[in-house]
Length: 436
Image (cartoon, rainbow, N blue to C red):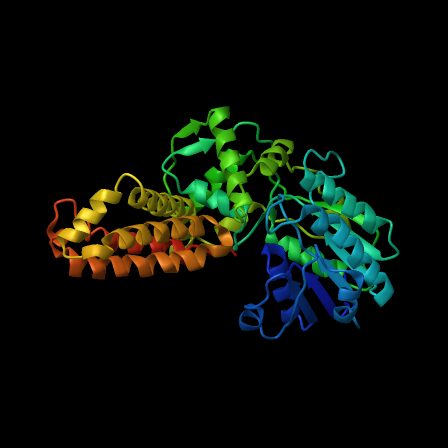
């Protein structure tokens, strides 16, 4: 690759995501003056204090919002994106209208270079709002006066994992290997090669006004890719199970429901349609132009043997939704029982322990608290607070039970002893709550 002097002050949008965070770190390590922007940047100065951090939501920022942060910026790298519409994701705002405002602000501020991440295949077909809005944003950038570069990577795989790359690890750890229907071939690309490509296009002399597909040299179907990761993780081959179409559809619908509650699972109907199209475009133009020699994913994995941390992550990835759903069902079910069919039994038990006239209020109050905790865990923005509240209430139940109904410690059904595994499940959910 050519040794041309690079631009110095770089603004990275979507700086906390998989691509953005690695691009920020690589540029900072190379001595660049990096302005890292994202919706949530509170931990940024702690993780990478050598970078300047700024809170900015691409979907809702106007041209005037951008002017102050773009002062003196030589180039912008836009890594922001969202898979599907939801309470925290605005597809049109992030991919199209917000991008238009940013592009216009860059033109006004005199930004020279704009490196933009799109998605492979949007120039061929747009089966979802994700790809339609991505394509509209691409067209807006192409029509601008900027020196633009559009990068369209396949599935990006590396040491870090998020979204599809995390799901692959999770599926690889299952005792059975589920085979999903209607999945087209993939040519996954190594994360390091994507970062190298961005650095190439931040050279002042690099070509511009070009759109490139970034794809690795190996072609896989989705199941083959999961098998490769299973081997890397050191798990024995697993029997394959073809998932019926109705069951696969149910899983995608469940993912959509989670999305409407503020979660961002990789398994949603948008992913189903995009996976059916595949991501296996030709990479010859990228290779010929940049000189990048794309890594084989198999070689990339072999170069870094899986650690025990990787095995833990893979094993816990799908345990996380199971733990959360179990707690949601537990708390909501407990609340409904307290104010419904189990109301009289609860009052009788408390009065047996000497609770007296306040027993009905305690049972109703406990039931309402349980319901609030259950619904709170289901809502992503409230999940952490609800899990902490669940742990607190569980401990209070243990104390109150010891005072009012101490014989329950010796109950054959272990009513009070079961609080211990419930607390442990809360801890598992809290530890795995973050996904990036």
